[in-house]
Image (tube, rainbow, N blue to C red; front, top):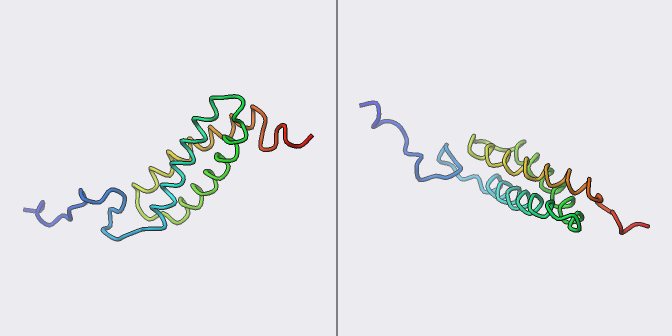
Length: 104
């Protein structure tokens, strides 16, 4: 009968404590989107400005999201976004950097 006393967390994607976390969820979504953009654009040498800048901003938003996150599900998504942002950032830096070709 102990199963009937457990809270149902299946309906909540990020918040396992059944409380809304709008700031944390927004930072998670922004970090994931920036990480995906940075990772994908890092595969193309001529898009190093986009990959390096989105990677840098993704790393910063992900780090702040980790600082204020409250649940494990939020932290897991933030780590995925941080990893993709970091890979995109470092490959963008290797291909030309933040200002490569703009500052003579």
